[in-house]
Image 1 (cartoon, rainbow, N blue to C red):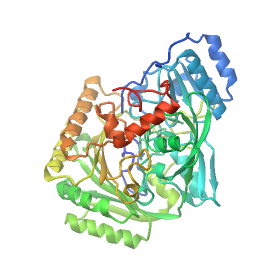
Image 2 (image 1 turned 90 degrees about the vertical axis):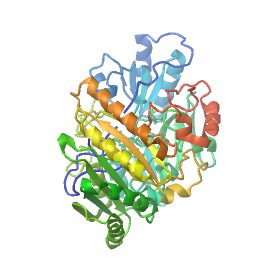
Image 3 (image 1 turned 180 degrees about the vertical axis):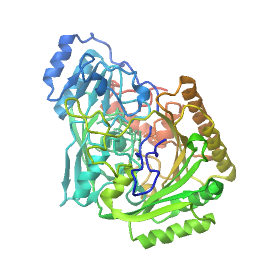
Image 4 (image 1 turned 60 degrees about the vertical axis):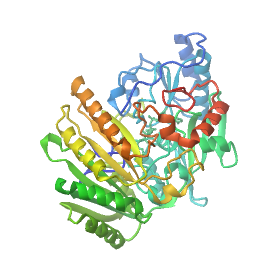
Amino acid sequence: MRAAGLAVTGALTTAAGGACRPIGQSPASSSPLAMSHTPKAADWSALGRSLAGRLIRPDDTDYTRARKNFNPRFDMIRPAGIAYCESPHDVAECLNFVRRYGLSVTPRCGGHSYTGASLGAGLVIDVSPMSSIRVDSPSGTATIGAGSRLVDVYDRLTSAGVSIPAGSCPTVGISGLTLGGGLGVVSRAHGVLSDNLRAIELVTADGRKLSCDARNNSDLFWACRGGGGATFGVATSFTFATHPASRIVVFFLNWPWSTARSVIDAWQHWAPFAPDALWSNLHILDGQAQAAPTLQIGGTYLGAQEDAVRLIEGLKARIGAEPSSQVIETTAYEHAMMIEAGCTTRSTAQCHLPGGLPGRTPVGQESREPEYAASHIFTRPMTGAAIDTILAAVRRRGGLAGGGQGGIAFDALGGAVNRVAPDATAFVHRDGLFNGQFTTTWTTAAPADAIRAQQSWLRSFHTAMKPYASGQAYQNYIDAGLSNWKQAYFGANYPKLLKVKNRYDPDRVFHSPQTVGVSG
Ligand SMILES: Cc1cc2nc3c(=O)[nH]c(=O)nc-3n(C[C@H](O)[C@H](O)[C@H](O)COP(=O)(O)OP(=O)(O)OC[C@H]3O[C@@H](n4cnc5c(N)ncnc54)[C@H](O)[C@@H]3O)c2cc1C
């Protein structure tokens, strides 16, 4: 498996192979709206003519390319249409169309949903063409089009000497990431991404274009900071507070498997309690091709390298061993984000998925990846028994067929993330020490029974860790196998989210198996 969302494997100076990986289940295929009549070819053509952007239909030569998301698991989903919206007006036209014909609608940005929630059988509203990025230095903000991908966001913002606390995967979309919270590589210093949101523009199910901030439509503004994608409307732009970004320390420490117990234990007592400037993660993955499992601590530090080194020495003292290899380096912020993205040998343009916008020459060289994942948020340190469970599960994964890689990736929380009240925004998770992401990937040639075995391995690993976790799960690591998702993703914020849903989308135009307001 390539390194998980918030991390990379490999040395700083090499292309670390991409910071991406993902999961899922088929999204909803029909709308709860009463079907008035099926749109005819002429109706679709009329929709196409009303848009400034392009409408792709199944008979279009670009259709196959257009319908592919990041995770090939969902390649069997065949939308009736994919509308590349250039403006809020285009979005409103699409929403009027789906309401008129009772079609299902799914907004899409980066297409990284773990459950394929940005694909459906009806109309996909793809916001990718709305990708302008404007930095406003006097106000300390940046307005980012809803179709922007993280690699472009970092590129544009850092060229103006600022950044936002987003994630590491270059191809993840700003929309899905922000609407579900957004954990990033400097989140302990600046909070989750949605904590930095100052305003959002969106088109609601009835086609209204609304501007939301702390004063205007404040209930919607509250809900859009963690309430999840495709729930209250289609976002068309986000305005964030920015932070100065010039140089940053990045580090990676690899450990021999024999030290696994003490590395896990030392990390969990160190990472969430470190100064805010230090963010880190811990990856424990099965060894590919019969090799020993791998153990890597990576991270960033916003400050002087000698301070980072002092903190890392403290970690080593706790572990009582030296890493088998380590890199600690201070580098330009934009280069650090390319390291985290695993994109150091590629240009910004190449650090995209190969599809690109239909009609334009595709230049992206990032690869898609089949993956299945789940998460637990931990609010207390794990016991020795929990650590033993991890070690046994990762070893077991090594014996499975189907290729790829699996294990668990912990991302440190605490710091600024936990200084926001749980009800201040819809993002409720404010007492976590770390988030644990369970992942397994396989090769495209893997047989169905091997894929099933990998997924069942992951589910049993996730279940075995439940007694040690908090019951919370991260809504952006959306998990179709989670039965109590309302509580796990939204906790005590769910009733307020439901009120907002009832106010802005009473007909449930936006619905998928784990959207606020759906039953189950
Ligand atoms: C490889 C990989 C790396 C990741 N790394 C991180 C990470 O570092 N940090 C982190 O927090 N998460 C990470 N994630 C999880 C990621 O935050 C979610 O998958 C997120 O939903 C992706 O957003 P997207 O726009 O790319 O996906 P999409 O699939 O396009 O959208 C996700 C959801 O949002 C909806 N949506 C999309 N656009 C809009 C819009 N404009 N308005 C309203 N709804 C919309 C979709 O319908 C869908 O329900 C990662 C995921 C993957 C696969």
